[in-house]
Length: 374
Ligand code: OGA
Ligand code: NI
Image (cartoon, rainbow, N blue to C red; front, side, top):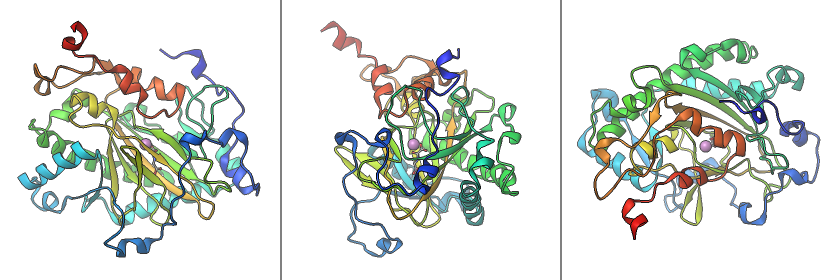
């Protein structure tokens, strides 16, 4: 059910790009994060960083070259996936099968879109009832601290909600590129879900069935635009959050770092590998796997020298299906940690409150009955 608070934004929308281009030296109070959330200064990233093997830690890499040729994952690959998902929940994937030209074209067409005059983009201004279109905030709480980001959000699947007339008509190739990109990335998602299933000792189609129930599941694209920020130490491009859905395939900006992944008390800055995707598990994956695999908190930092574009492709459960821990992953020692819930119900939290770390999933955990009776 849609609450009335989700019909419109609580305050007039300000485009971050317009603020940035106005040449202000100080950011408005609304974008200043409390000291505990501010990023610590990060050394400037340059693509040459890849040359330094002694470099600081980066998220792990998974190479799908084997399955792209044989269509099957070796035991070694499944073990690697299991390790990476348990320890990190975040990885870069190479030899993933998506055309490198298409990746570049999709990213650049969105960069061009954000470069169009503001009147053109305003035609797609979104509202919180669907979030579809051109937006500048997530969450509807009056007085909230905002993130230094504009975005465009659209539905790709299921087909019944796909509506290309809501996608940008300009640049002229935009709609076609979204369709092609969505198709190839969806295929990658299916390959990854099958590997994840098998890495958990489940049938290859287990996760897909758990998330779609025999019909089309959901997929959305959010193109993020992080303008230059005159005071990057005070702001965030995207506050700490975990993605609410099943799995996210992120195409980062190859020239500008910004994504940070939480590792305990630290934030690891991801150094994008050329032509790789960054994959992270979402909250619904944590629910279905009964927290054997976990969603991981991440955030985005901004900088004063360069703007940044990223494409986040969210693979989500069918909206009205009850999502719950897989029976095979529930044991006496490890009882079901979550009660069944639909994704439609689940996503209301972030849509209302905005990004808030992993607070939603943590609040839903069921205490094991043993503990309750002690
Ligand atoms: C997101 C996200 C990261 C990035 O859109 O959910 O985490 O690098 N984006 O833009
Ligand atoms: Ni995210």
